[in-house]
Amino acid sequence: MPTVSMEDYLKALYHLESRTPRVSTTALARWLHVAPASATEMLRRLAAWQPPLVHYTPRHGATLTPEGRRLALRIIRKHRLLERFLHDILGFPWDAVHAEAERLEHAVSDEFIRRLAALLGDPAYDPHGHPIPGPDLHLPPVTDTPLLHAPPGVPLVVKRVSDRDPGLLRRITELGLHLGQRLIVLERTPYDQLLHLQLEPGGGRAVVGPRLAQSIFVQQVEPPITPPPAAPLEAHR
Amino acid sequence: MPTVSMEDYLKALYHLESRTPRVSTTALARWLHVAPASATEMLRRLAAWQPPLVHYTPRHGATLTPEGRRLALRIIRKHRLLERFLHDILGFPWDAVHAEAERLEHAVSDEFIRRLAALLGDPAYDPHGHPIPGPDLHLPPVTDTPLLHAPPGVPLVVKRVSDRDPGLLRRITELGLHLGQRLIVLERTPYDQLLHLQLEPGGGRAVVGPRLAQSIFVQQVEPPITPPPAAPLEAHR
DNA sequence: CCCACAATTTAGGCAACCCTAAATCTGGAG
DNA sequence: CTCCAGATTTAGGGTTGCCTAAATTGTGGG
Ligand SMILES: [Mn+2]
Ligand SMILES: [Mn+2]
Ligand SMILES: [Mn+2]
Ligand SMILES: [Mn+2]
Image 1 (cartoon, chains in turn purple, yellow, brown, red):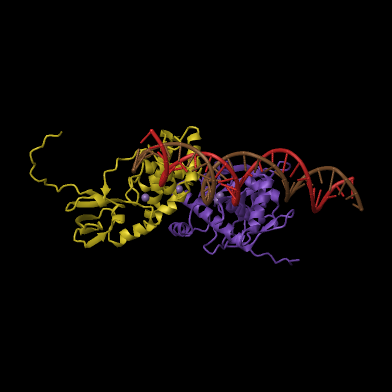
Image 2 (image 1 turned 45 degrees about the horizontal axis):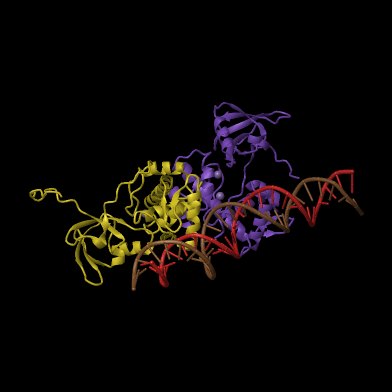
């Protein structure tokens, strides 16, 4: 029986905790597009909840309690399964599903989600490549890195894109990118940090700026089946 | 941009108007399980809306304006399509769909409903036999009557059941009744108004009290294909 | 080591919903 | 035609969630 707002704050706290263990009032307020005073007020409420959903030390930020984290993951599971449904079954474009799921996640029951998950075949990822917490709320560790920091010359796959900005997603589509797209960073230009990409196989080229490159997450492609002759192992330090 | 509460009040007004053209504060309050003072307050709000959603004369009840009726029908369309989805695709039992749809109806976008209607094949009725307003919000006129007032000895079909009380729906199922079930009223007992039913074809018997009989709506079965020899037409007055 | 300034909280308000208790109106019985 | 019981509104409050403006505090640069 947390309210819709409380659920959105819990989700925000969960996302922000992946960057900094303690979440500041300002970061929270900015993420949710509310005034800092509103975030302060909500943190007090979440800390006063029985059982408490955050540990809140005035002037020193907040952390989710285990119970807070559990609730956050429950909403995230609902959100991502709904996105899959909206995309796969209703045919919404991938830049439209987030906003719709943002409202629905607070309206669907646990029973609804159980049935939906079964209908969808218990998918492990949402349409943007975010992992979906299982019924036990477990999440696999993240193994991808922002394209921005990916090494040049190495074969990569697009694993995940951030999903809060529809314009960004449309731009990504325009460039010919999508989940599973293979590519190689050809060059990183100095000063303006543009990335020149070679899309594979046989795809074209694309240039992306740092804004975009920060929102696209890639992984190195597993090495080819016949590995190159093993070089003598270097000593690890 | 009416709120969730406003939408629920509009829907309630729509339902109550089918009984009495002017809806009283008390009737509205009772329907929504709120205090009369709360209904008064909301009626003022709805009347002050731009454009006004009700005509409200203090102490003399309210009526929906055309715009209010339009919004009510839009929510009812969402509600009933969602019930079909929950029932047909997610497999919810028919006594569970109403409560779930009651929340979802406020969270889904028009675009969601367009796509859902297409997926479902533009159904005309919800799982309880209520007609679903089309995209133009048109509703067919109701032609069924409460079983309570149905004539004995005549072949009938169950066309519609009221859906707000899950216990009622479960009871109806227990009795072997469902939409499309054919039956004949064998007898109406005096004083306690019990109806003895013969379920067809080849079905068993059932006895229902007035509470139930008021919530089940039936229609006479079309006459058999070879009509009885036409009696001479009586003059209409 | 201090102090200014950025971050944060406090104070005070507003809107939507809901409630109970007290006033007020109104239509129908007599 | 009067009057009263029941329907309805008004008065006064509570909660959630948001805001702006003012006060406060903690810390990092000097
Ligand atoms: Mn949300
Ligand atoms: Mn997503
Ligand atoms: Mn509702
Ligand atoms: Mn229904």
